Length: 371
Image 1 (tube, one colour):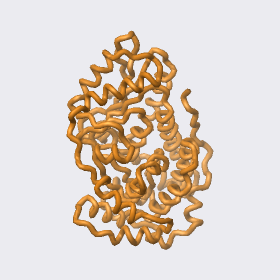
Image 2: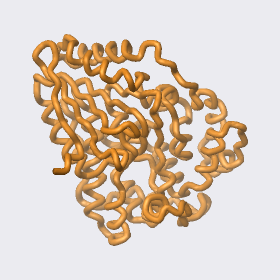
Image 3: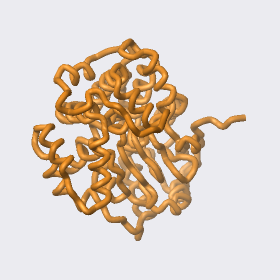
Image 4: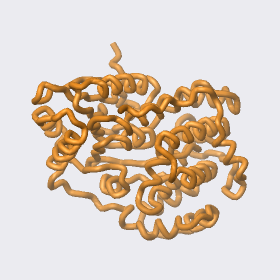
């Protein structure tokens, strides 16, 4: 018998209550988030939210390499080839159901811990970002790499990258730069560094803690438990913090073509920055243009409004050629040589951007807070 792609269990706590544990269980694919995973997680999380005897949730993953390396795009890829600019019902379900899950996590009414060990990228960041307690470890590698595949940082990325210090979120969107635990905490994408070896200690602390069954008190208690588990942990150096002023200066202003010129011309002895600049230069101009358009539009939007806009944007990418071409180059043929169309930022018109953001399809996600 094949195991389910998400495993669920409940651990008893000191006051006779329970703590839910959801484990992504596809380690051979680095726990890439699939439709099947989403369809298991969403109803279980709703049940736990409604159960007064469940005081919180911890989400982790099987294996030592990754919490979640992103969305599982292989099945989506074939539908992009088949549907092209026509309506893509699979894509509507794929993105709509994923964003419903992400929104559910953002609005979850109880402590929600994400154990973000190993690779946390794309859809994995989407799962982690909305949790009330986002744990990173010495092995965490966090990134939003969508510019490599002709997409944009979705799964709420337009929301949470807009809230990072200065222009660091824009930098992460444009360059797909990988960041460590210290960077993630500095950027507001994670809350606490806990050594991966202390996970058993955290689970034991959850079972013995005196949970109150009230969200504010229980969130404060969870914060104390994680802080204790992370005491004395060595914090790595943060490249985002080190290069903060340079990133802000390079990505300053409201002229995207000027930002493009400065970013391409950026010189540094730091291999991390060199890699970021090279990745940007090879990335999809359409991804950069839409990331920029969303960056400008979302500051005064609610979280639900951002997810709805991202839903239309994602279907827009499905209807244009770059997304399928990026998946082909990175995941299917693996030649890492995509042919982007348009090939440069200068060729992208306002009409091209607007066509990505218009409403299409008929299955807009239901984004109802759990209160």
